[in-house]
Length: 215
Image 1 (tube, rainbow, N blue to C red):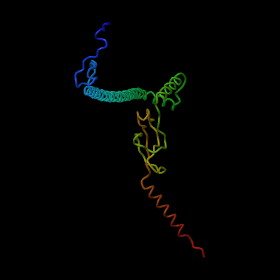
Image 2: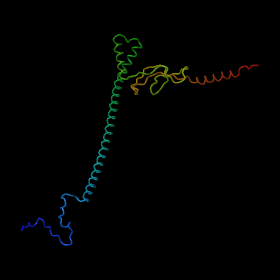
Image 3: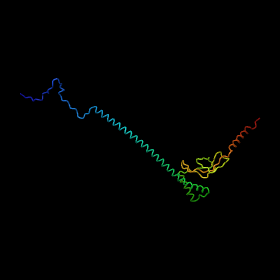
Image 4: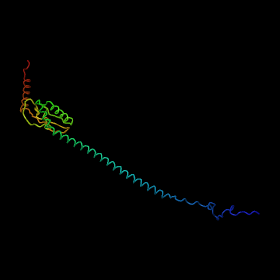
């Protein structure tokens, strides 16, 4: 008679009223698995941190743009000041040269600009012109108190407005800056000349109108 080994074919005892599934062992929950509520909280926290980082980035970007604008304004201001200082320095230098240029002009008028002195004088005038010095003032131009300085005054019957009739010293400008006004002699219309001309014109017109009538 063969003996059966107990424990291989035998089924575990199942309590009455229990299903077979109850007899099977349940798998233990995996370690490290977070509940759904904790995951939502983590996502919300990360979202809040991302918003804070974005806000900080926007603030830093605005600060950088403001600094760049201030730096550009500073560069433009420095460049403008540099140009202004340079123009003032050149204008001061040219102002110191004006008496020499006046002497050269008088020597030229008297025919004394000869030889080596002539070459030096013309070289000096060329350098001054390259630096931006411009001479102005001509006889016959209307008197402008912003660029002319009247040293002599007279009346003339052949002018219709205050006119520069003689240039005593030429004026000089550097760019838009007037270094020295032109010193001139001016002439104004003869008092009563305009009225006399107007009366002569009206009388001539009257005589023309009162001419002999054709029969």
